[in-house]
Amino acid sequence: MKRMIAVLFCITMIAAFAAAQAPAPHKAPAHMTVTGKVTELTATALKIERSVKGKAEAMEFTLDKPLTGFAVGDEVVVKYHVKDGKSVAIEVQKAPAKK
Image (cartoon, rainbow, N blue to C red; front, side, top):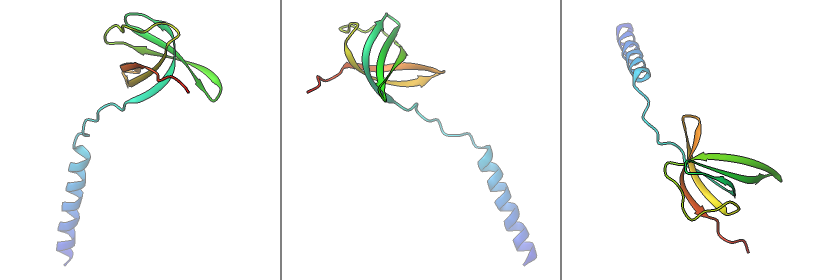
């Protein structure tokens, strides 16, 4: 009986060690969405200003390709993810008109 408990304990420890050594599965970056007004637009960057609890907050996004059809002052919705500490815009759309 003692021998069986010892064998089960060893098997459990080996399985736990193997699980700890296994690499973590690769997770896709989380996508986030923000709405704001365009304050600056270049070929490689987009800056917007949004309101958080009544206070203005600036956000900057890196662009993979230049945006067309947007101008300073436009209300936009930006879908983005964080990569290497920078916010990278995935999709930019004009915000729907407020009623």
